[in-house]
Length: 564
Image (tube, rainbow, N blue to C red; front, side, top):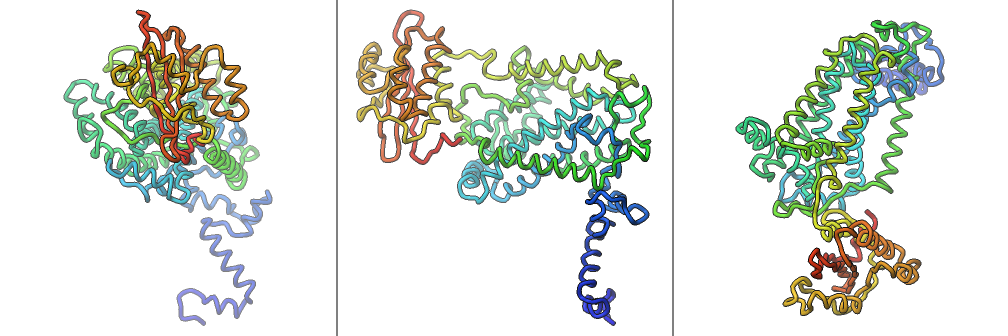
């Protein structure tokens, strides 16, 4: 006999034999890990057999386990398919789990300081194994989490699942929606590039408009740590993103799931009698137990979503990283993150205080109290035509406001600057940067390096440029696209695509703002492995005076812009 308080494994081997002792040891470990299910129970569950032990061991993990304690032990058969839940709530939680895992990985290599944050991002993308993959997965997961939480809220509204007795479940879901938005928003700043800096600057500027002035000013200082975003603001956003908001999310996720277990998942509206909530009174013949049916279905969804995410970040999606944040240079057409574009669209409609503070506060306030205001008991679609119509109108308004928040609405710049921005954006790739280095056709050994708009510097009058530029560059004219296609269409397809896009932008998209316009590509070998590309546009202004605009970029052979 062993003197230890537990039987010795060697004694078990002696008494029972090696095979039986090992099996019983593994069986005991499995039972402890699963909080009550042994190997035989798991085998029966996977086979779809009825449990051979009583009481049902498949219910034990829900009573004694930590994770399954917040999941119902059984469901009504009517809610286990795609409709009515569409698995949106579960997938929202899974996206949060992805964010936690990938975020912990990225935290190892990141320091929240303006001095090194951008360098850390370059290090993650260039030198950390799986760094770009994890960052892309984190960014795509964040976008997916915002989308799925919003869709989950919309689904809950349209099916009337927020009604009594689930008012507080909706309330916690509204909190989770806000937490999700702010989680994504605070993470937006951390790369410390131009896109992040100015998007967050726009977002936080709305807090400054909160009345009275002393409140707005102090809220702005609390968020930014200074009148403008700097080291203090970056540290605040980092701590909110990795500590405060995730902790808040975890607390309310557990509360939310607890209320779901308490009240059950609401049945499809047509299956419930008016005013009767029968979700908890599930007949035995309609029960579908979480283990194994719902669990295996969720594992299938997890596998499918994970596969889609991996494929997306491997071949199709890469999180952008623009130039280093520069408070002195505002990029053209700076916007907030896409999920706040509706708010930016509202700001274009009127007063900053009313549209940026008062109305959003009213909207989210109504979202919180809506279940307590709507006292009608019926969840059936035919009885909720007004509510569903208002919901659809709200969706349409959000889409319209989101469009209004983009640079394509209510923002006017000079046509030449708009054209250059679209072809060679200050932040981002654009069609010209996307041309591979080897496809750039060198047009001259003697480019013009001086300011073309200043004859004293360039040595040419602007009216003379349309004579000089065709000799050192490639003219993109309204009538020579067939010739350019014959020259470059087969041998340099991406370069020809850039020429084609330039023709479309200069001669069609902005034809009303550019009179007698001409465009030129001047490309030279600036130094070994670096080519200089100069896009030049000449046109007549409203006084028939010839004008010129240009933008120059330098492309390295290893820059690989075409891969992004």
